[in-house]
Amino acid sequence: MTSRTARPARSSRSSRSGRSLREPLELGGSVWFQTGEHTLGGASRIALLAAIGETGSITGAAKAVGMSYKAAWDAIDAMNNLAGEALVERATGGKGGGGTTLTPRATKLIATFRAVEREHRRFLERAGEAIENFVDDWQLIGRIGMKTSARNQLYGKVSAVTRGAVNDEVELELPGGQTIVAVLTHESTETLGLTPGAQAFALIKASWVMLLVDDGKPVKLSARNQLRGTVSGVKRGAVNSEAALQLDGGPVVTAIVTNESVDALGLHDGVKAIAVFKASSVILGVSD
Image (tube, rainbow, N blue to C red):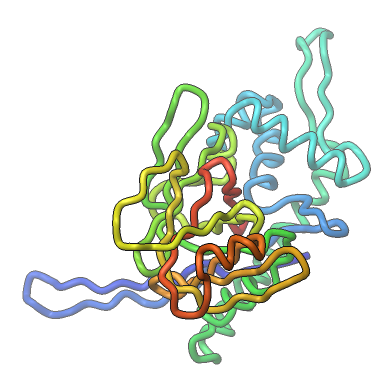
């Protein structure tokens, strides 16, 4: 079982009399169950299970939690597979015309999740009162604990979502103001809850990143993502080199390039360069 806090909801506003009214700090968070290295379910999947129990229908449950029918069934299949037993069963035919029901295991899982979520909320409240900067520290602990084979893990905030005929184009603004563009299916955008203002992370393999020397002139390429920065390190290997590019605003992007390319481009510390990669090479994720 894992838990993580969300960004605190703290804001201030001015009253008509001119006095500044500060709202109390509120800690948000989420809990999810894991089996091995796989996530069985978090708040959204548990909500789907509960809605199925209430409506007896996948269509009704999906509508109640704001999912498409396909996304709901994909989530159910994943939960059934990861649980090692059925959590949702679908009956066809019969007097009532069939329907969807929860197994006793699913009902128990919902009750357990809700009990743990209550305790998690109490923990967040106590920790927030006792530990200075608790929310920021807890978020960072969660981020640095993430394991993935992608060398580049960049966090930001969704700044725009453009729906297309088949796929969606999602823009993620990084610290410092530069933007990453990713192309996702409609179902992925919906399932991940990618809307403007949502926090997300982008995964890009180092082998998918190309480097160009930045001479200050506009670059015309088919690749949507062009992040500018300064080379902060080059580690040479037998055939390839690992080049790190410090982006404006702090994040670092790593690229794997041949030693010949390093020499031809004159890549060394302090050189201005551009990290280039396609929108289709970006994988987006969120913390459930």
